[in-house]
Image (cartoon, rainbow over all chains, first blue to last red; front, top):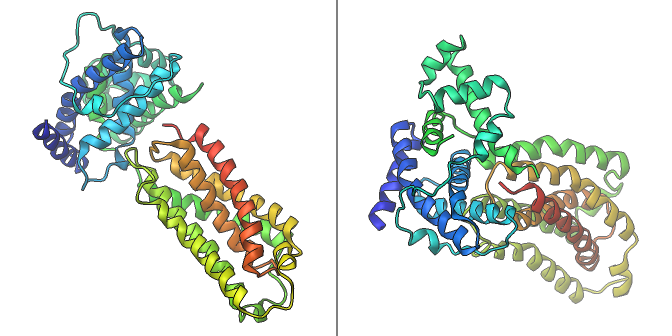
Length: 181
Length: 212
C-alpha cells in the first residue's frame, strides 16, 4: 500500500513537470482504487453500485482540474482521497442520500477491476452533448479516436495551441455543467 | 465516454498549467480594492484630524487589529483552498487580532479616561460602522470567493466564512481611518458585529459557490 502511494507521488511529480506519459500511468493506476471505493460508498448508501463509473469519472475530472492545489512536497494519496471523498459525498447527495464517507474507505481499498455489472458512465457523455460543437469534436477526436493534439489540429485546420485551449475549456465546462443544479 | 478514453483526454491536457490559487486570489483582491476605496471616498473619507490622530496609539491599534485579521484570514484561506486541508493548526492565527483587542482594552482600562466606559463603547459612529464595513466588504468578498473558487476547499462554508473575515478585515482597515471612535471597546463591539455579519454572508455564499 505504502509503496503504491509513493509510486503515485513520484508519478504526479513527473506529471507536474510535464511528463504526460507518467500522468497517464498515474490516472490508470488510481482508477481501480477509486472505482472500488465508489462501489463501496454506493453499496453502503443503499444505491445501485452499477453507477460507480460516473463517480469515478467525476473524481478524475476534479483531480485533473484541481491538480494545481496539490503541494508537490506532500504525498499524493491524501490529496487524491480528499478529492475522491468530496466527489463521492457529492454524488450520493445528488442521488438523495446524505452519507458520511470515511477516508479510510479509500486508503484501505484494494483495486477492483471493472465488473460486468458496472454500467458505462453516461453523465459525462450527456454533458458532452451540450458543449459547443468545436470543443465537442476536439474532445471526441482525442478521447474516442485516440488522435494526438497534432493530428487533431491538422484535422480541424487549427493551430495546436488553439486545440489545447479548446480541449482544456471543454474539460473545464464538463465539470461546470455538473455544478449547475 | 469510457473511463479509459477520459483518462487519455486528461493526459493530453497535461500541458495545461493553472495559476496558483494565491496568485488568482491576489489579482482578484487587487482588482476589487478600487471599488471599495471608491465607496470609501464617496461616502466617508479620511477623518479631518488624521495627522493628530496618528499620535494616538489607540487610533493606530485599530489598523493593527484589522490588518492582523485580514492577513491571518488570507493565510488561512489559502491553506483551506486545498482539498485535504482543515482548520486544525491554523485557526489560532485568528487569535492574533483578538489578542490585540484584549491588550488594547486592558491598556485603556489602566489609563485615566475623560469619558465613562459605556460612552466610549457606544461611541458616536456605531450605525455608520455597521453599514460601511459590510458595504465596503462586499466587492472584496466577491473577489475572495472568486479566488478561492480556483482552489478546491473541502468545506465550502468554512472557506467562505474565512473569505468574509478577510474582506471585513480589509474593509475595516479603510473604515478605521474615517471613524473618530478609537476606543478598543468601540472597536471590539461594533467592528466585531460588522465582521460577524460579513462572515455569515461569506459562509452562506461560500456554501453555494465554493463547491468544486
